[in-house]
Image (cartoon, rainbow, N blue to C red):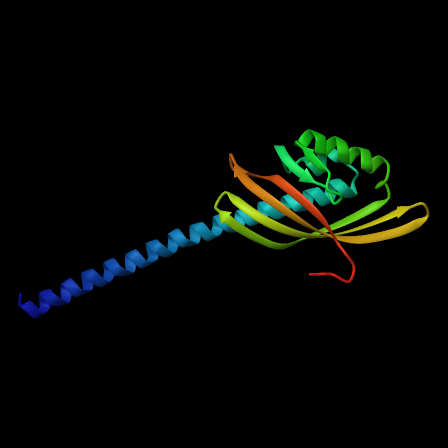
Length: 168
């Protein structure tokens, strides 16, 4: 065997190893993308569940995506602590002031700070009938979500009313 043939075989082996490494790296990257896509879908499902809980007048369903020790800041600045209180408080308003309301929510921005922590900005529109009058307003909600034991939970919620004429 001459040096030229050995060099060609060596080059072929090196190229095959490089191709294998590129495919292996791509496969690892695809797995990370799949995980992010699954995480994003789970986060969006939590937002849909809040909307469904509101529109079916179920405090328990509305509160289900929240962590047991979640912090919830209402549009008026009131601070509610814990999923149980979020459930009870919403059940009260669903039976009174918001019994004839309809909420629509949409994820505007989702950003992973770490693989297990995300900040989510949600646009909301609430339409309610009170005292024979229909009222409608917009809010922007900021959620901090944490993945714990494979499940995404809302650990912090901040609700801010969008003032007409001052939209971001």
